[in-house]
Length: 216
Image (tube, rainbow, N blue to C red; front, side, top):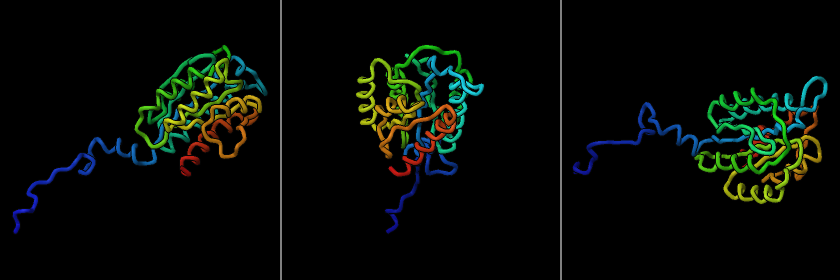
């Protein structure tokens, strides 16, 4: 009657003690983890100055806080600096160090706006990541650029692949433009920042990101 009893036992690495090397991958897939690519507009108009600080300096401050909150919320963070092209970029990492390092050098750029190259790159960064939530957070101070119609079509494709796009614009006009590529907007209104609130509003993108994830 005892011949049926299993004589040997084996387990995948994640079930043994101490946990095997696959545990982190499973936590990312089935836990609360995510990945976000933050797109920061570094076009020439971001050099505009008020009260001794440029809009870019205010935006960088907000991005630093965004990264901190995203990491605390268990998101890997990448960064794209964009103008009429991709000015610089780093892929998402778990500690955010690469994004912070690039952010510290986010100055001296010129040019206009074209969101398409950055949006395509962000999509490619996130598409194959095996995490629970994938997000592109876009800040811009102007329009979508000369390929606005393509940008809106592209955002539809990105959304169909399970990647969320959140947007913020500097001023009402830019906010309305950026809203054209947002994949979800619970309030129904574009999200607009002012020069005075810019740092806080970019930081607020992280709160919008995590709040919407909890409702999904």
